[in-house]
Length: 152
Image (tube, rainbow, N blue to C red; front, side, top):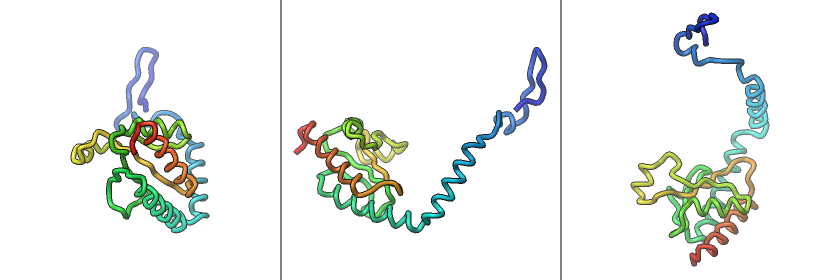
């Protein structure tokens, strides 16, 4: 990071080395290595099948919830949606009160949101650790949000 240090001054190194300060994140590298071993043990194909099955199940359940769902039916484990007439941040807050974590906002896709003529969307994503019970809890939380906002 530094080429030379004096009592009165310091001379910075050239790019990119001047931004390489401090000790590398050794604990983080060890943790990443263990995470990779864990995923390899399970098998990426198994993880993909689990996510595909859970996403299909979620799409089927959410299609009954009278939501605006964005994107194709076949997708990865990310689903963006809105409850008509309810801001995505309000949906996220209500779900948060039920210990259900989703994202509400524009998700760095403001041009898409402008194209869809929406200010924000709610987004749920799944991973290896999610189950169909999580989907059921999500749907129950969405029902609560609709009741609070008097949506059907």
